[in-house]
Image (cartoon, rainbow, N blue to C red; front, side, top):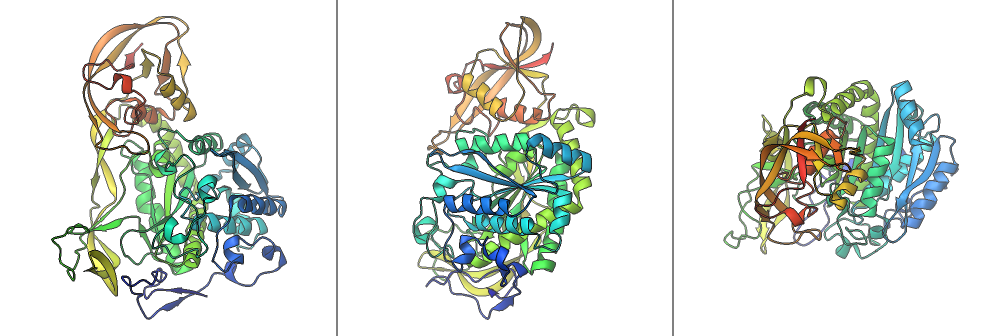
Length: 562
């Protein structure tokens, strides 16, 4: 039986000397999938279930279980999105009635029947195993029809599940105290956060330096899901939410898609999670208090103020930001690290299920939003002339929120949970506004070939062309004015922020010049990646270091007229 903390929705925090458990506890009504099941389900149990939530699966066990699930139903197609650095399979299962086996078949079925395509992927940070196990359970439920609405979901949706996105990190098992300090299990250990290159896969969606990132982006480009869920486990502030979430928010993206996801879609998810699963949910974030946790001037016993709820930056290095710039709904799903492993798997499974259900209910609206976002990405129709934000800043919601937290005290130099519940009135800083804007050019032209940047664009699925004859164009050519490097290396890079000034010119582009038009659905992504002043573009990630110096002419020119 699952047991949650006093406010339904949060499993009990890990018992430590500095983090007493709140009491008394209330019973969280177990979902049907935890109950004793018939033989077909027993044969398809996850490692988490069969170990009584003491262990998590190896990559080989994930592959074996997905193969067994696919063999148990005519509605599943199993394939691999590619290999990892160390050659492990990145397994995928597609569930639909009828079965679909190709990206073209999925897109045609979705278009002909008005379906939505949803991708769930987990274990991007391989110590955060909850979504991996939860998505395996959900795949089994959909395959065997053990949900009351399994059949209808597979007629309304095409569900793609990739539960183990980081197999190399997954199989680097370590004690949980090492893999995820403070996390409530699995007691038998978990993998490491990074991949075999020691890179964080959730910082790779713009630069695409890892085979895992390239494989996933190719999958997304080919199968074209409308909704993409990225399953994580978070630590951070003490609060009373078993599950938190975030959606697209990069201000360069389509405003209607961002707003609908944040204000409508997630509001419906909140209601369903509470009504169907007795789980409280909220936007992913942390309390921002008056004091820094490591400030030596703060005495032990002092209370920390809880005035703001803040979140991670709106950048396309993260999955949700990136998929938003692809005109799709990217969803961050975060179970709460201090809850029990069993509860976290239940919460991750419940949130993914309610995303599927709400996507099915809203599929007509969602599909229309995505179509309009693609039009916006190409700068067409009512979106023609819209300027594109290449930098942004956090902004607060128009109203405060009541956040479910705890009283915290400073003990032995750290802020700790006292176990006393408190609801805080906080500003919610979960949205972003543009601070620097550029107009959309007709195209970008590589006046000097930069093979790594050109190949990066291709890997995103962006269309490129090559001039077969010289052509005179009206252009804006950038001169780099200044470059500010980060103070230390990050993910093997020293990130750069450049200031550049454009000069209008008439130039002749020679035959063989690589051209990137912006009137394609990924046109906004093109602008964001190629503008030298972008805060998370290709210059940021060292693709243009040869020219990232004051006085240099940037090798990518804005073409304003042919």
